Image 1 (cartoon, helix red, strand yellow):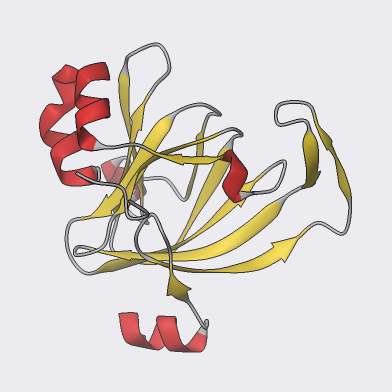
Image 2 (cartoon, rainbow, N blue to C red; image 1 turned 45 degrees about the vertical axis):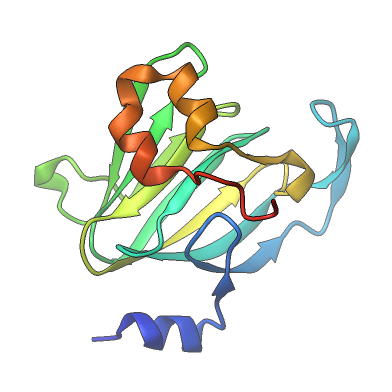
Length: 166
């Protein structure tokens, strides 16, 4: 059984700005003008992404849909703050009887983050058009609590008090 350290080393994962460890694995050979960003983007990108209980994927927003694929480890929860103000939890893992799924979609414009309650989880994430940091937005706990007060306890766990670049 591979450990978290084994996956990080063997997959050559690096720390990610939103939390966890990642490595881009694929990007499309083709690019096109993305109407949403008015910039050239690969048709898709895909990463390995490893999270553990001490390093969640902090709440952030993408300009495009992101697909998540569960590979190994413990189940994780993707917390989704929807543009209409509602909340949805996506549960990824291998226990289908418990309502976990092997893959899930986070719609464009959703504010989301993911956490593992124990151990670690290895997933892949695919974005189309491809991921670009110009389409990525981290938000602070204060900003998010003002927008989604009913989710204040989750936001406190999952959002930065101060953005890492500040």
